Length: 99
Image 1 (spheres, rainbow, N blue to C red):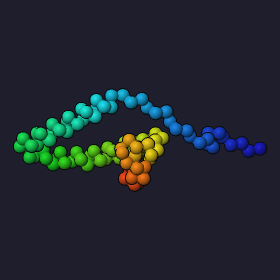
Image 2 (tube, rainbow, N blue to C red; image 1 turned 60 degrees about the vertical axis):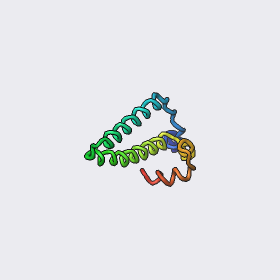
Image 3 (cartoon, rainbow, N blue to C red; image 1 turned 135 degrees about the vertical axis):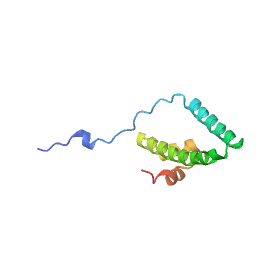
Image 4 (cartoon, rainbow, N blue to C red; image 1 turned 30 degrees about the horizontal axis):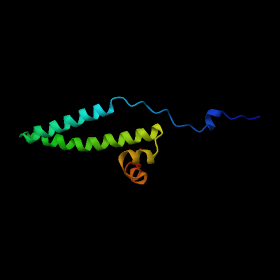
């Protein structure tokens, strides 16, 4: 008689959500740093302009990584879209192709 391992047929449930710790303070810190960098460029540091612009691309990459991590953690496109103020379809179209 053949038996099937339950672990192979079990549908995984949503993982336990991680407790949010200091995200607001961390985001505020990051915003202060970016604004300070902009002020430094505005005060005549033209050489730093390219670095400031590069932050935009790195931020886009970080957002994509964060969204894909949340998807892997079990969050739906609807939940992600809701947090961003966009539809689930818009979120999926923007980040769904990143794997």
